[in-house]
Image (cartoon, rainbow, N blue to C red; front, top):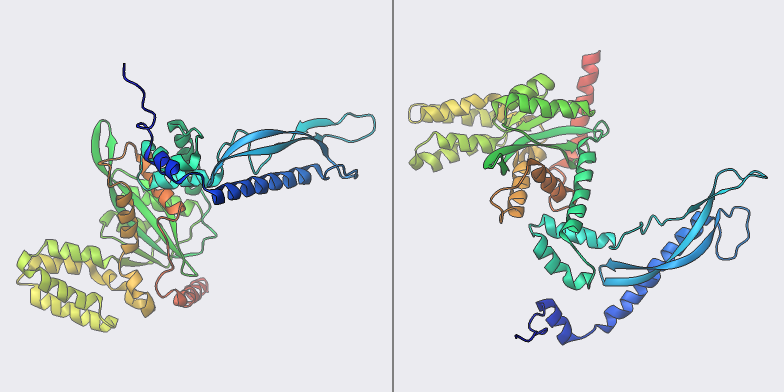
Length: 419
């Protein structure tokens, strides 16, 4: 019969703790955390009752009713605290009428809660960084110090993000003050009907009048078609989003048609990075570097006039050598050069949909250990979670200082149209 070897079964974290021994500083801080939590909840109860200990005042709305011990996990581990109990009055206080009594419950520390919000946030952060349940439990084992953490507990925390996503996806957009909108799709792999298939997530990012970028919507669709994009844009307008001044889009024909129908007459900038890739796909490999250099002379010119001259040079040089490349360039038309109408400090930000490419890059880093995701919903939850948790950051647009100028020009244009 094999003897049990408890030491051999010790986890690495336990071994470290056993070697180092208890940390006196942590013990002191944990006691202070306990005192602070108890003080805050005592103050919350006093506010609810309208009176402190033994106070006899007219505004008293109830009375204390002892206390109970609670165990809660904080960022310093498991802590035992004493939670006060109380009952307060409800109903009429007229003479001869009995008042209803109702048990008081803390809003700061809800009933049945066994973990502080900081611990839940840590669990969610690890989940969004790509860890599975086993890794989460292992990483947080020293922190939780014996507090159970089941797979269902993690699922409930993730479900909280799903609820937040549902509210976010239905929120009103009328007050956002969006001036520019970036529209593009990112490809993901999802298991549907027993097969792994690629599906696009249609992404809309807006730029407010102060230059701040904001994620407007995420939508999984079967394809990047006219109907799919029209549905996305109609959802945005249905939630109060006004037509932007400018839409920066990829080369999707369906998207361009949807923008024209839903936001007729706005400026459109075709992504110059997408177009460059398309040009190179029509060219033999030995011409790639030369074509790239000539194309960038167009989209990195110092003025619209210089860009138009560079485009004519490109056309004359390549129309006989690579006819397909020239056709692709001319297909983009003036919408490749729309950004030249805007403040020069914004050109770098407006000439491409790279902001959405960065969202895709962060998402791919999150799922790099997974060949596919189980559902379309999982894709949206992870993307939204990365955004809401700050792992996908939205910085101000380059040249945001000139946003006021763009907004003023838009207002003047609107007034002229009304007149």
